[in-house]
Length: 184
Picture 1: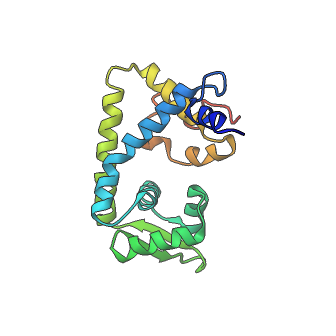
Picture 2: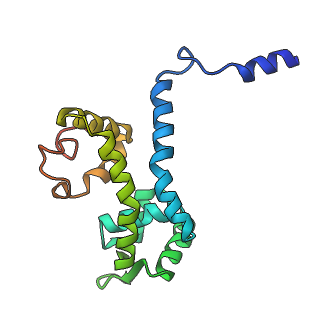
Picture 3: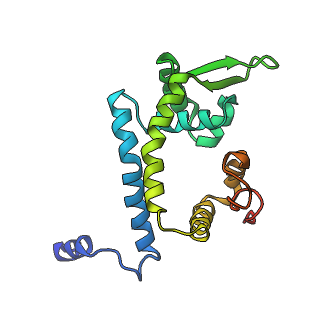
């Protein structure tokens, strides 16, 4: 292969003919970048990263979940979780309590500091979402929720469905949860 062909292949962007939905792919990249930017700044100041954010978020959403449940939810290795969890426990953001019925199960709970940090991370993200949805109708919001739900692998949607719909409002307010979407 000559250098002219190499240069042409590097300088030629992907086209819509080569990959479908490039516009949506780019919007997902850019929106995720900005969605995580505010929490990243907060986390960086205390020496934490996105893994800490995810762990704190889910422990706060389901206090008392086991380490095994969290591993399954995050789809990370035990080794990766162990490091992050140790830091969160050592800094007083999470409590790990051995289950009374089975000492092999360790249940995770946020502390007040963990809850406060989680809310400080969620607040700018919540504002960003509210601003983006500012002129959207409820129907448009449901379309967005449905789209995001359908982006999750069908066999993993049960994890979304496991959160209490009462936490989101009524089933008519959040129809993407549990009842309205087929599993495939």
